[in-house]
Image (tube, rainbow over all chains, first blue to last red; front, side):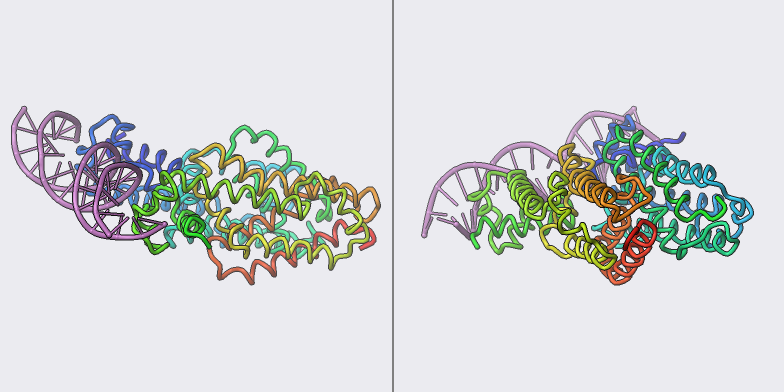
Length: 205
Length: 205
DNA sequence: GTCTATAAGAAGATAGAC
DNA sequence: GTCTATCTTCTTATAGAC
């Protein structure tokens, strides 16, 4: 790993815990194991480091979203996978979505960074909303819409169903970001939630 | 309003938007309309101002929680009110909870402050979790539990029902904190959510 | 590319006049 | 209780040797 990458890495860790303005370039340098002036051979300013982090993580997200087809546009491609969805599969989908977002280091740190900077920078608020509200809901709306058409699920309106399915996962995610000790409890609540969800909406489930 | 109160007021506004370390004592002084050194006649330090805000808002919350019986301990007292709950009443309850938390100036600013400082200070994370996860869920769990006993609602487990009811409200709240323009859309989604909720769980509704 | 030395300015806080 | 002047420390950033 190059020094430049290590700077971005350590800076992300620090920014995600303390926020941009509470992190000093000296902190970043110390975490990397160099002296502050050396940072300026790799980045022209503190803001430049922050922008570098943002660029990489946005790219990572877009790549993942395309690959995992979480961008809502490609949900119809997943119907093949989910057309015969069972309660266990729905449960697995929810639990894995939750645990991935919670445990993946870059994803978690980026979310925390966005959380801390969302009221400061309009662009960061937009990224947060896109990644944690609009695209998850959009994806699941499409998915449930298709499952309703197929008669696999019934009794609901797709966008409300998406909200019902996703909101508890989101709530537990923000809870565990504050307090990792509550992960087990969160997983159990999510599992109970999805079982109830599939019981209520499940046609042939 | 005393100068001391105005300082706390303006400081809260600034802290809730930019976070503690991005707000300078000069910013607070300017907002109040005095010079920075004058602040130190009222508070001994910047941190002291922050602590003063915290103390008042925590008191406010505890008072409101007791009055509105939102602390989960007193939910059983509300059963009288809700024992004959209708879909419209459930809808009103959800919408008013949402709009109060969103529009009340102190509540909103305190929540934003907690959002920005939650990863920094363990105590603030605890306050956030208490106010926006544990107590709302605890209150509603008790409430739904009692309504289930009375046969007013059916088909669910109380703590999962509470999560189903509250999580979408919480999601929309954090969304509108980032982007006030989405309030109308959020209210409509919450209304659709609660109608679906009462359709699914409603026994005699 | 990393270091030491250092500049330049910002930020928190105090002293003392009014 | 507010002000001007000032202090100290912190913070970002640059210069220039190695």
